[in-house]
Amino acid sequence: MRSKISLILIIYLIIFTVSIYALNFEDINNLEYEISAEYNHDAEAFTQGLEIYNNHLYEGTGLYGRSSLRKIDIESAKVLKKINLDKKYFGEGITILNNKIYQLTWKEHTAFVYDLNFNLLNKFEYDGEGWGLTNDGQYLIMSNGSQFIFFRDPKTFKIIKKIKVNINDNIVQDINELEYLDGFIYANIWQKDYIIKIDAETGSIKAYLDFSNLLDQKHEDQADVLNGIAYDFQNKSFLITGKLWPKIYRVTIKNDL
Ligand code: DDQ
Ligand code: CA
Image (cartoon, rainbow, N blue to C red; front, side, top):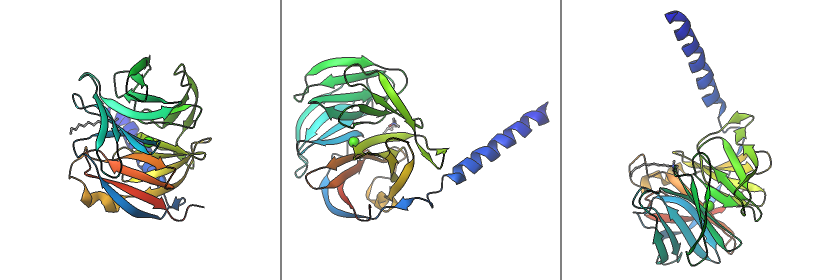
C-alpha cells in the first residue's frame, strides 16, 4: 500500500516537473523594449491595479488596512485623490469602463463600482478570488490566480466567457494584473519577472517581456513583486511597476510586429 502511494506520488512529481519544463519560453517572441522614463511611486503602495484614464494614473492598492484607490499625476507622482477601503478588504485589480471605476477584492468576493470622483455607486459579489482587472471597451476582463481569464458583463458582473492561458496547450497559472490592448491581454504572473502577451481570443501566449534586470531596483522581499501594467495611449507606451516599488517605468516595445 505504502509503495503504491509513493509510486503515485513519484508519477505526479514527474508530470509536474515535465509540465514546468514545458513552460519554456523559447518558442515565443521575447519582446525588446526601452525604458524611456521613470517616475516616483509610493513605496508604501502595494500595487494591485494600474490603469491610465484621461492622462491620469489610477492605482488600486492591497493589504488589509492599507488598501486604497488613488488618482495620480504621472509626472509628479502627486496623489490627487485617494480613498481607503475598510480594513476588512484587501484591494485588488482596477479598471475604468464607461466612466465607472471597478475595483476587485482578493478574498472578500466583492467588486466596488465608483464614479470618477470615487463616490461608491454599486457593489457586485462573485465566487472565488479577485486578482487582476482590465477591459476591452465592452467587457470587464478578470483574473483570479488560476489559468483562466474571465470576461464579465459590466452591468451585471455575469461571466460571458473564459479563456485558458497557455503556451502550446501547457497552462500558465497565477495570472495577476492585466492590461488589454488591441486584441491582446498583457499580464503579470505572480512572483515572476516577466509580462506575457496573451491572445485575448484563444488564451495562447504570443510573446513576453523580461524585466528581471529591474530586480535590483526594488526591495528584497517575496511580496514586492513586479505587478502593475497601464497602457498610455497618448505616448504609445506602457507604465509598469511593482508592489511597494519606489519607481514606475515607462516601457516602449521595440520589436513588436
Ligand atoms: N495576490 O496579489 C497574489 C492576489 C495577493 C498577494 C498577497 C500577498 C500578501 C503578502 C503580504 C506581505 C506583507 C508585506
Ligand atoms: Ca492594468
